[in-house]
Each structure stands twice: as structure tokens, then as C-alpha cells.
Amino acid sequence: MKVIVVGAGIAGLSAAIGLRRAGHEVLILDKSSLSHEVGAAIHVQPNASRVVSQWGFDVKRARLVTAQSTTYTSGDDLRVLNVVDHSNIEEEYGSGYFYSHRVDLHTELKLLATGEEGQGKPAVIQNKCEVVGYDTINGSVILADGKSMTADLIVGADGIHSTAVKEVTGYENPAVPTGISCFRCLIPVKEIQDDPECAFFMEEMEGKLRMFVSPTESQRRVVWYPCRENQILNVAFMCPDREGLESTEDWNIRIPSEIFLNELTGYHPALRHLLAKGKDVRLWKLLFRAPLPTWHRGKLVVIGDAAHPMLPYQGQAGAQAIEDGCALGVLFSKLPPGNPTVETISTRLHSFEKIRKNRASAMQMFSNAGPDQSEKVKESARAFMEEGQCVPSNPQEYQEYIFKHDVAKVCEVELERINQ
Image: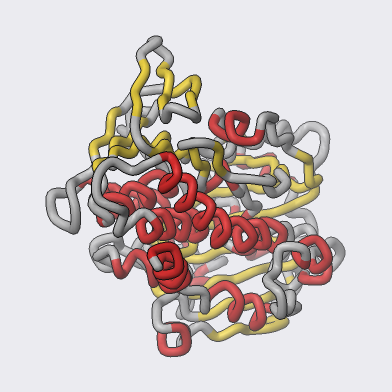
């Protein structure tokens, strides 16, 4: 089967890996040059690490950090409010919990998609290929230069500003302001360790996520965790949006660090001193996009941020994209002999949507609040839970719901049903 994947981010590469391993010919079209992949850090939780380990992902080469704990701390006086231990995660869920620099994760996924080693034919990436239109019936994409390409399956992994979504649903999925903005930056750990005024924050910091909650405004919270072999500290600060911040839905808008520091009023002086070391600060307006009614039409299916954009509170956006890629690979394996028929493509896409849409939609809702704020999202998430499933109400229950899920196993059961 010939597959065109539109977009070479985490979702697009994951789809390429899954479909390559299923024996298909994969072409990835990306409008960027991929010469300078940017980004902060990202969680690779057990539901995702379980998948990538099956793909041959090299944790050591990718310089991932094993998560050890999450500590909730009062931002003004640094009192520890709660500690969630992650040291037994691999034993409990059968796969590890990691923190990764986004570039490191992307690099390793790209190698698994396009490298000579590995199962199936290597995927091919064509850069600077902007897709501007789709023919969902015939499985074609139209490029900005007027050319068209055709395949048996088109995977729209073109991100938050997806053009594929409108082709699937018939309308633009509007972005709704949440009233929250997020500042992000990366700080070298050694720079903090060498400063006596804030070095104590880095004592035994390996693999430890810390959240500093404002005592007066629950929406204000600093979150940090290490990546790249504990050498880089990834920092995010969520705060109420206001006129003058000039944040956008693109998270890589640079802003002066003074604006960041001005928003940290009321936080402990040592914490403010540490955060002042963030030199390349990016600002991101958190906008919510509602779950889509369907993810596919004809030969086109959308995945990743195109299908289920998420806010950062659960750290699951990348993991859900990886689940999408795995699901496509499993469900499009063991196809009947010969060229796939329209009926075969339709059957497999219906199964894909049945398995993935409600789970990812629930995660969209959960991602509107932190694991310690479940009361804010319980009702909105309930509609997407499977019958008999309880909506998580605390960090441990979120962990159970998110981490235990084995997308490959679920898809294998569905594949058996299809092929009976």
C-alpha cells in the first residue's frame, strides 16, 4: 500500500514508523526544511514508551531522563505540599516514564522512520512540500506548486493549524481562548548549580519534576523537569492571560525575559532568581479546540495535533500522537492480497477511529487542567469514557488511566475481529 503522510512532526513520524513496519511504502511531505527542529521538552510516559520500545527506540542514544518523582510545592515559601513517587513506574506498568528534549525525541523517531535498519522499507521525507488541498475520494494531495500526488491512504499530521481537518469535517475547528498563557524556556543545569543563591534547587534533581503553585491563584504555576541527561532544565510557567502579553497559539514566539519575570510577583526570591536565567523565553497562548466529530473521510485520516490538540497540563500530546501512529500501523497490517479496496481502507479507518477517538478526546478534556485539578474537567471528560470506566479524580487515578493503556494490544484484538 502507498501512503502519503503530511507533516514530519512527532505524529507524522510515528505514523510513518507504524506503517513502514506494517510493510507499506511511506512518503512524508513536510513544508519545512527540517534543518532546525526546535522545541522545549516533552513527556514520554509509559503508554508511549511501551510503543517506541517495540519500535527499537534507543533511550540512551536519545539522552532521555527517567522520571523519578513529581513534587508539588508552594511558590511563595517553598513548602512541599505533596510528592508523587515515580521510581516504580516501569515495574508497575511494564514500561518506563521519561523526559526528553523535543529535538532528541524527534531525531530518534526520524531515524526509526527513515533509517535503513528496522522492519519494512524506510520512509522517504520530501522537505519544502506544502500541501494546500486534498481529494479525499481519490486519495490525492495538491501541493503549493500545483502538482498532485496520489496514494492509497493519506495521513494528515499537519499540526494545530491543519488544513486536512476542514477536508474531513467540512468546517474549521475554532480555537477558544482559555484565559491562560504559558511562558517556556530552557536553562542549563550547571548554570544553576554554580549560583549559590539558587543551587539548592538542583540538589538531587535528577529525574524530578517540580511544580510551584501560587498560594493565591491556582492558575499560576511554575513547572520544571530535566531533560537531555539531566543537563537541561525545561521550565514552563502558566499564568492568566492579559492584554499586553501578545501571546499567540504558536508556542515559539520570543519575548523579553523581563516580561516573564514581571509575571512572577509573589514567588519566592530564590525561585525568581533561578528563573531569571531563562534567556530565550517563548510565550504561548493556551487555546482549546473541541474534539472532532470524526477523524476521517474517504482516504484521508487526521492524527496528532490535527485531530486532538491538547493543552500541556497532562503532558500527553506527544504520547497520544505516538499512540495514533502505532494504531495505524497495527490496523493496516495483514491486509488482503492485492491493492487495497475502498472498502478495506474504510473498514480499517473506522476501526482506527473507534479505538482512538474517544480516548484522545477524553485526554483533550483532561489536559485542560492538572492532575491535581480534576474537578475542573470531570463532567466534560465523562462523555468520552468507555462504559464502566470512572473519570480519574486524583493524580494516582490519572496515572492508572493513562499509563496502563496498551494501544498495540487493543488494536491487535480489533484486527482479529476484522479478519475473522
